[in-house]
Length: 421
Length: 63
Ligand SMILES: Cc1cc2nc3c(=O)[nH]c(=O)nc-3n(C[C@H](O)[C@H](O)[C@H](O)COP(=O)(O)OP(=O)(O)OC[C@H]3O[C@@H](n4cnc5c(N)ncnc54)[C@H](O)[C@@H]3O)c2cc1C
Ligand code: SF4
View 1 (tube, rainbow over the protein chains, first blue to last red):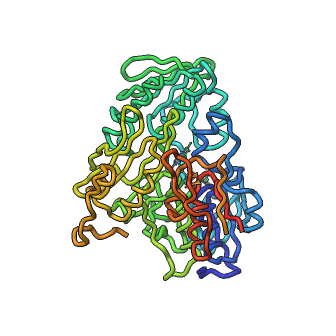
View 2 (cartoon, helix red, strand yellow):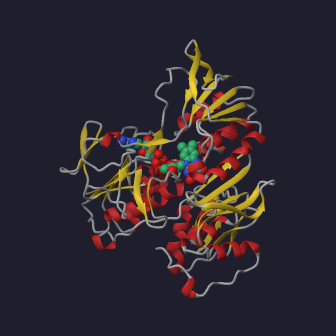
View 3 (cartoon, chains in turn brown, blue):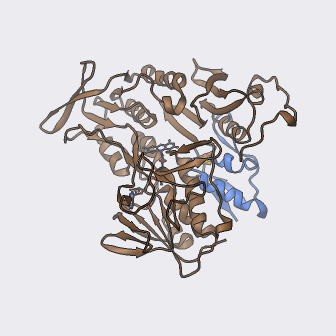
């Protein structure tokens, strides 16, 4: 139930997934006061995963998250779009938008993250990043048959862009600084295994090299030189080396930030400031289901965190919900659906189902008697069931037994680990 | 109340299944199966959560 009254105001900074969900959850809690959503992009909330998928491949239109009329009819929220919040004054309970202060009774910060840039890059046309719908239009123009695209970073999004560009008959090179792409997300061996998809689909993936020089002609990028001395001619250089949280505007606010620039939150997604919550890619928080603190940059966590932060921001002290999750993300490469749940670090992956050669398999990540993660490639029916089992603390024997069809038999209650809540 | 799936929008990610396994399940072919399309009053909150969990806005609740 909402503890804030009809005359109170909830302000949400960031008009994207997490911010929208926060506003919706506040209404679902019964909050009847004013909701103002402030966003620096000029569009109503839209979805980002399609940007590197359908939008890039087919030129699909801007993927709005909700129909416009829901904002007036059910959400009853006021949008202030096209200008950023530039400061937060917690003592006065105001945020600065334009040059005016706006009062809040509860605040949710959902300003997401922006692509990390390489500091040494020259100012030239053809050097781009992908985060917003505007970026897609620029990218699509360049990604046309016969053109040569170079992507810096073999991460999830870099891989999707490579796959979309191959689908449009581009020559594609990926430059990856480490020897082990996707190690953080999938673990060393699985990251390398999946990255072989690039070679099989005609993308030139080069690992263990970095960019040493960018060649330009009349302010247009024409090629790059790599640390091993090799040269690659290119029409477009796409930088996809991760993101940095959008918290620059909070630096004077006194809010506690982590060393990586994200907002430090507790398990209720409250920040270090009173009545100020945060959600989505901008947040670090202690995840009780993985035992790890940090950021997640996934659609599912932004969606869920938005809902928890919005409800907690308007709710009473005793009604607040903690947030914990078995992380989940998906990605589409060269027509293959890749899904991952849980964590890969410090666990040993084992293929338990299907065939790696046929790009159709399930991998469980084992740590002692526990399963920390599951990777499914073109096995869409498996992932959510295994994610649920991980959440409930299922043992390795139980989970692998299911796949081997040997039905390992449920262990006695005494042997079962206590479910992690 | 009844659940409606827009098959043109659903891409089989299974996030609805995560929120409400009693109603949704992704099959081996990646197609969403409605385990049950009827929603009782008590299930409504869970199903609404499933609908909001869908990244492609493929689900609707009909009266
Ligand atoms: C191309 C691409 C593909 C992706 N694909 C997948 C995928 O397949 N699966 C998956 O799980 N995840 C994927 N993601 C990640 C997912 O989209 C993000 O995790 C999610 O968008 C995070 O939502 P958010 O609301 O926290 O932040 P964002 O979506 O980044 O939104 C933050 C908003 O706040 C605005 N803002 C920033 N600063 C201010 C300010 N000072 N004042 C006002 N507004 C401000 C920003 O402009 C932005 O509109 C993808 C992301 C991208 C970019
Ligand atoms: S979450 Fe949406 S896209 Fe995914 S299976 Fe359910 S309805 Fe389909």
